[in-house]
Length: 224
Length: 263
Image (cartoon, rainbow over all chains, first blue to last red):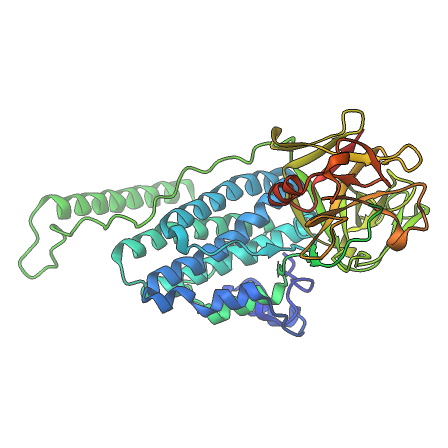
């Protein structure tokens, strides 16, 4: 089995680190590069709801942002119709689940729910191999992120909710790894990943972008 | 291992497995000694804070349209790969907004590279071309559609196939006709001071085929007016004019990227 290669996605090695920790790839596969910044990711890392005295709300918003990312990825992959066979089937099923996660988080957060950022998946939804590589990275990252935040949740009901989704993300991770041809479970214990670490990984992909600038304060010069 | 040996091993294995099952059953049925941890009486799991609804399949949406930003300057070609050059696209419009194209379909060339066929904001009107996928940004979607009926002088906006807006409009005079065809909304200009263009203006990918020396290329806009008394009818240099209240309302309803049909 060949190694995963996120060279198009992973400009600073953060995804490489994630994959290495997950035991699916050696660090030498990856390239080093510069980080890019987006307002959405800064918002993701800033815990806006914490100012309102609710750590749980902040954590749920953090989870919502990751779910937005996953739901948009699988939805676009389905719309592009570029996948074949079992990968296509998996994108349809997992996409439906991730959209359900988004709806659930938005329902429970109500007006405190963060809005979805803009995404540019840079062709990874239009190529079978790139799709599976990215899906493995996303699902592994989601599992690590939930694991990192679950012990910080204060309400047991919130913890129960996080655990109910965490196991589903773990199944997705195993499914995508299987489809890509890497072993689903190689370690006895999985490690969590902190929010700054997750943010850095997501940021390194440049999948979260600023919204296009299509509105401007300027005198028209159309034909009139 | 001989068949006899395999049979003996199987019997031993089954015996051990049976003993294990019996032992586990006994542990559940008989009371545990005082020193053993008590398994009975564990509290019920807490109710999750959120209810995850059943997954819904992505519905085929005939009203869904896609557009994308020109992220890097690109040459549009007549076919994926080595087609002839159709147009050169920059990353900005003359108005200073991001240049966008309306995505129609995708294909791969002989080398497996992905290309996107798009409606282009160039003359002649209706031109399409193939752009390398990597020159474009992320895909964005809209479910709206603007129909301009030149004969009736009306503008109709639909969302998911349902009419949400209709207004009388002024269109091009016979010597400066509003071009017919399929276009898209490129940008939106706001907060400028002009009675002539009204409070808000949309730029389209349509261009006047007559006023080719008009500043910034003679693009056709959808905008307000200071002469509502001339609407409806043939009154403009090719632009689509409507009452200021109507254009403000349309500004709230119509996103950039909306496909436009002028017929």
